[in-house]
Length: 250
Image 1: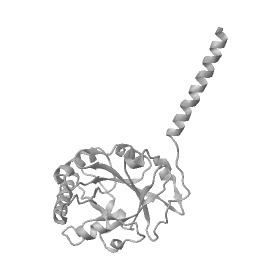
Image 2 (image 1 turned 60 degrees about the horizontal axis):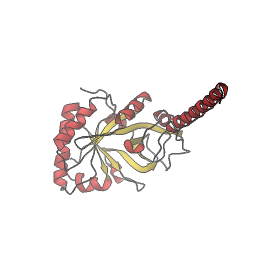
Image 3 (image 1 turned 30 degrees about the vertical axis):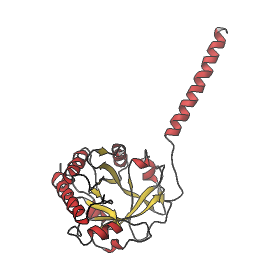
Image 4 (image 1 turned 45 degrees about the vertical axis):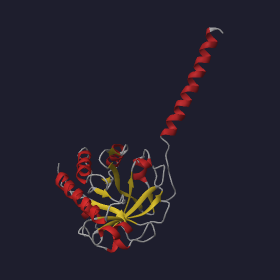
């Protein structure tokens, strides 16, 4: 093979490699666009939001922000930050940066495990939270008992709330499903805390209570920029007064 033939062969190989590289890059930046939110959005609520974690993969927050269906758009987001005493969600930083860039109100939640020490979980969450400038009240996500009694869970959650409020200057809201709320919290000394309730049955009785401000109505939403199904939430008009932070004390 003469020199000219070798150069042509190398050029062709380079073009092929460049094409393959561009295809890989394009695949990694794939956009996910949907015709709607995948489910009817409950009426009479002014704010629509999502909650996300590593399960949603890498999110294109610009597409999330740009999506508008019948005047509904994503106005707030809750991002998983921590779980237990040692797990930090591997998409938390990226999600926080994306939400910040798109000026979407966001806050962090901690997935609480009753079998682990409440104080250690609270301090772990606070240490991680201090790295960010979030805009919504923090949240404790409690939806499993791990075979502990209701009274034990209530006491542990109370300890978590008290420590986070002391450390961060903002008392967390409590996220749970409606059955768990009724069984564990509604008749406890935590009944007057701020709540965010999940119920996927088309209605949420707890939203009639004055201290329940957010309803997670589906876990099968479709939102532009997110490759998998995502939780959808609606909030009362008073949501911003209660959940949006005017100032974050460090």
